[in-house]
Length: 142
Image 1 (cartoon, rainbow, N blue to C red):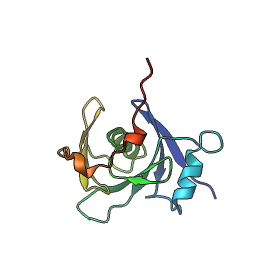
Image 2: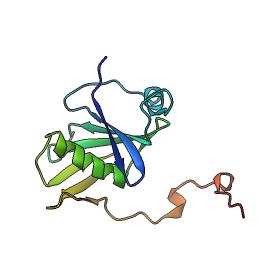
Image 3: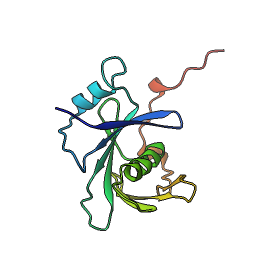
């Protein structure tokens, strides 16, 4: 099977972007992890999926997978690459792009100088909502 993809970089993160508007691919977490492998796959931090929206008021649906195959809600750097991708591939000519994500709606604005501004909504400042383990803390060596 031939799969068209694009590799993109945003502030130190690298992404594999798949256009699932013009092509259909069956993905699962094991395949995502294989693709993410830097030795035997394409290699990436996150996989960005461009899909048609389920809500007619939105322009696209945007799905994000970590290299281990788990799906995540948001990624600001990825959203900026997403906006550039859909414009470069002529999937839209809009300057303000409405996008569905797992978390909800986000809005991407392409400025006159082609920068991308991402409105991801208000931050959630509730530490209890996010798992934390002292076993996974960063070790500092002096």
